[in-house]
Length: 141
Image (tube, rainbow, N blue to C red; front, side, top):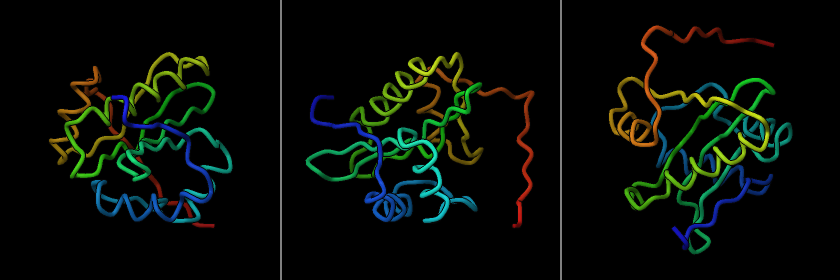
């Protein structure tokens, strides 16, 4: 898709990204706040990828790499821009990043109830691993 520009987010993008997620993303997490996203961008400036069309934010994905595994979060496309290849372009950019970093397998966090997202991930070549279950603990500091 030639009219979509994919680029890493900078500090100036954080508030617009958080507002965007309220419209385009399904659900929220404890770290979906300014401090959490600011730490992400400061620690790994290329992890949060933005898709823009005509200067407007139309999609995001977090392509995190911990030196061992590749993790994908917050793949979101604005509802008015879905089914136009933006998610595919974001995932291709994430794949390119992972390959450059030496990653060998990507995994994605996908809400069980988000059937639309499950279809998108399947179309991108991902498949669920039913034998795994995510375990979480909220940390206090």
